[in-house]
Image 1 (cartoon, rainbow, N blue to C red):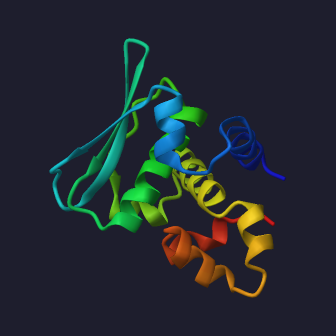
Image 2 (cartoon, rainbow, N blue to C red; image 1 turned 30 degrees about the horizontal axis):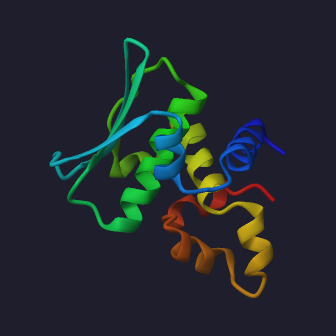
Length: 142
């Protein structure tokens, strides 16, 4: 099990949910939707002990869910680092902190419990149901 997956499992156990909006609210991380440039999905900011997640209000709901999960990953894994804008092309990023945030989002949205409950579904079907882009499925650790 990777350390990122352990962090995610700890959050799910602590807050009793894998919903990134509920976890962010419980942790007093402010989530805002803004009309951002079409290439920008979202970003995370840390300012004077306050944490903010901004997501593009023009995104489809499944992509908003993934973006909030990704940015929540930054807040947990890299809390004092202001991250660059999450762009559509960062799905393929090799940058270490972006891969970690993507892994966090995948593990949050497709926890092992969801796989066990839906054992008849493929990982790609689960990804579609849980709001995970298919390009990210390879990050799921079994």
